[in-house]
Image 1 (cartoon, each protein chain N blue to C red):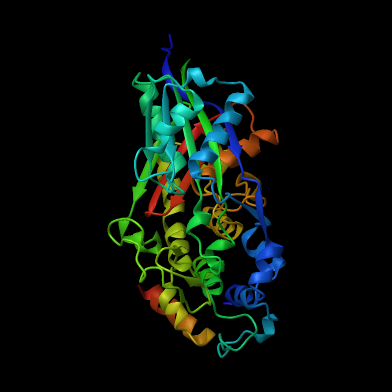
Image 2 (cartoon, rainbow over the protein chains, first blue to last red):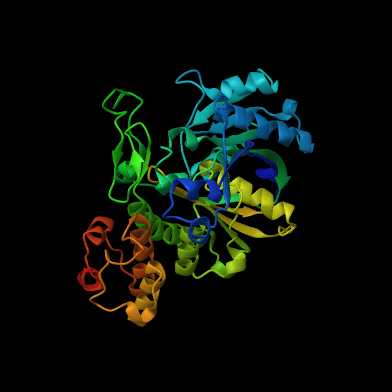
Length: 342
Length: 76
């Protein structure tokens, strides 16, 4: 006789992209050495969306959640825990997730917290949601991922402006009775020695904003930025990703006692086409098993994985029984991988 | 070595025949910029299974300099 227990599963996902479009054509007018085709060829990105001047990550998350409820699989009154993953909160304090509870009309008996992670954030959020649900602490977790990196980017820094876009996703994780695990197992990884390679250095307490930190400098590649802006050392981040992501995938397969062939889709953090193809080659995964969805939104940080899942589902490519591997990796350095039984 | 040269020709957007050990990284139309360096890290990892340091790559002047880095990295 099999024993049924409470397990966590993803019930539904919604996404939101802000309306302002930043196209390759516009970027190529600013950076004449990078024509539109070259940007597309390298990044796989045609356009990114940019949050309005007064639009915060909290606003994007609110829009994504509103769409999730509109889709009808869950209602706002079902939610008993909110997790918001962002690196651009509305205020230093209070917690943006608390403000969202009120805006969405979610029960005052719900828990709410923010987590500060970037590209690995969705997988970490899933692990927290699973923990809350499978210990009986919550029944319906609203996992929101939202970021507005555009607000940190210097307009003349093509190394990051070509890649990042603003977006939000809302994922409902609910309790269900089932015989097999739907989310998990997980593997995690952290290497804070890489912090300096993907950073907004000034603006908090280690380096408060000042006239000095606002000074713009031009680097060897002609990119302009100040210490208040987002900085990415592309070479180091690429080296880190090529080193850690395939290892995380192997460790997860070992933990789950599975092989690569058992996995139907490898849904990796959608950094850009170039990085995903380099990882795909290294991981020896066929093209059709490693989807790339950056064309119309770029790298949306913690929202790339739920957006990819949403699009795979929308295209009818996900079938019941499919096994997916999710891998988030980036700023921190922080990474995490998990399996999903669809 | 040919797979590496083919990759370098793609990165610099030049004919394969142009890529030799003496090829000057700063001479072509395509600059030896951050994107070229990131591309080279991925290419070298793919061809030789070694990870080069971005800073060291940035200091290279010719393909031969990159080849020296690869040889040194192989010896570990």
